[in-house]
Length: 132
Image (cartoon, rainbow, N blue to C red; front, top):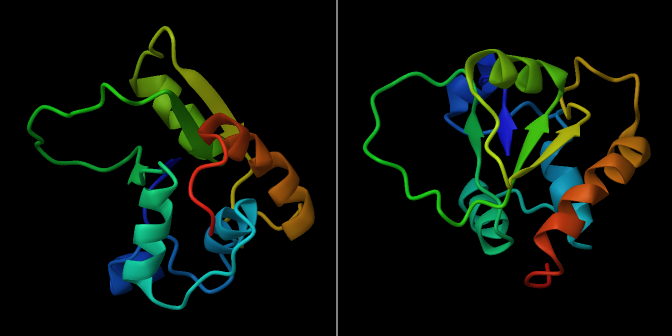
């Protein structure tokens, strides 16, 4: 799951999707019929258990070789992440790319139910996975 870049609250708390009105965690947990836990380490364990990795398109830094051979799909949390990715990276053949509506509170034109409906495509890609 690629986001654009961390917001101020996420940077302050050093947590992905930390803004209390960001719908990322409620949507991802709802995809698997679960309720988000308040514990950030438990949230990370939940997405990992369901085969979801988190990163940002605009992250900078030097990295060692990535072990990405098991990646089947790339999901974009909002059109900004998709546009930046497409501007700076080539799409890889054989990968599925999902453009999902942003969970950010700045993009409130769609409510929770509508966003969850779009995000359900992610659950289909991941398969049933572990139960929430």
